[in-house]
Length: 316
Image (cartoon, rainbow, N blue to C red; front, top):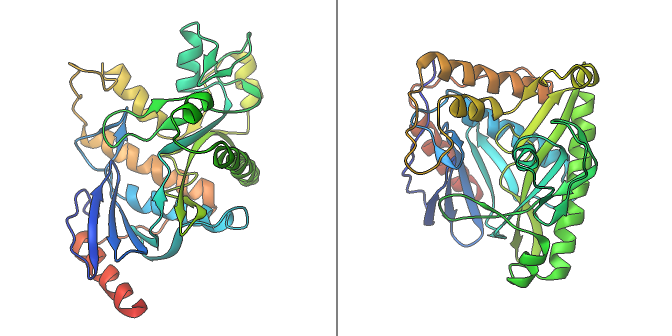
């Protein structure tokens, strides 16, 4: 079994700064390049779980790379190259501090909000009479502010503009691009027998140009249903078959953890960790239609270090 890549403290040639996120470690090279090291860490409820998931970083990086290439006709993306299964190198964009969350179905956070009796999420009205996992009449956009640490927070379009996070013109562009990306993702998912339920997109500016950054359509940022049998399961009130990390959140909730103060993280058994790993690999193969070829390195940190240094040397 491959060793997990959980922590990195690299010092690459030309490195000017480093930022360690929940899953990705970002290294700035000079003023124009960014190296993303996609770790095997996993987070839920904005909390990093205490054990890494074998191959998770490769799965996320592989799916993100696949979809970044597939949407580059809609919007320029930050990606330049993926010289290692856990690495993407790209443009160093100035991130816009918003997550553009788009939801096609009443699932997850939207359903929890709806079940509490509320009918408005991020300033967007949700119609009466919906059941869990029912489709919205049309996808709704429910943005969240990007927190440096702690929980991201829901925010409405009106509050985004009031707080001056972006201009109205830029927000209109973000909204229309989000819908176009979701439509492309929906179409690609349907080709694979899947329903893209909800997802989030992040954007940045590079030399004044809007770009799609971070990851796209991965199990960390998206939720998928199995299309076959969806209607039957809805009609019979049976839970939908999901391909996402929602099952991790559900397992944590069943064990009394939702990331709230004074809650204790349950012990993650080796069996549970392997189950999560297998689910990520299955999603990669289902979403991309490609066989997952897992890296079996026993020293992924050294491999990443070599790959990045070689790429910088060859492209400087």
